Length: 281
Image (cartoon, rainbow, N blue to C red):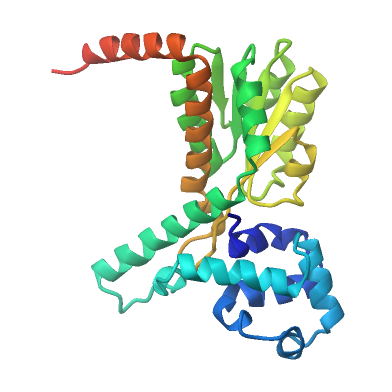
């Protein structure tokens, strides 16, 4: 079942300023919105009923009532009220831990609810049949790309991760036929990443994107896009909190590919465990 709040948050960047203002109000006050009429919400947000209805349609709902049902179902499933509370200097360490972990749990839950099974299956098929896999990401996303490489080398498919933009575009230019490139970017607007992916596509590579924004340049350019849902706080940016969601999606892809290449993956795991054992006392 799709998370209403996660779905709205993922669409925020692609909305007009007015629609985004209303959507942000809904995300921040979901319990209040489910008890409001469309007229009351229009008054609170200084908009019109027609504008709110247009927002609902743009978000993929039949109307305002359909949106409220989605929000109500989510509120029933997640009764904990502290998951979106901001951290405070007065918080003790236990409270800090609770808020941080709840934020991560919520991000993972919302990302799970955004998964399109068809897209996920298509991504797994592309990766399983790839002649080579390259993972591209800059900054924090580069660390995620390295983690993906660490996992996927067990599948037996030639792969590598590039966090440097020069390595990315050089690697893209040398891709063989049947290659797949996974581009990781929270914003989906990293100029250097997009340049490398354009080169990769010109070489015939399939592009899989992992991002948080449906209207981003990356999501529009990719052959397959998988979305994460995250929330910014005073302490953590959205990009920072997207890490676990990105890892969750890549873990899912790895497991999916491993199941399709089970024999080779299991043999590689045994080999890796054997050679790694030599590094332990």
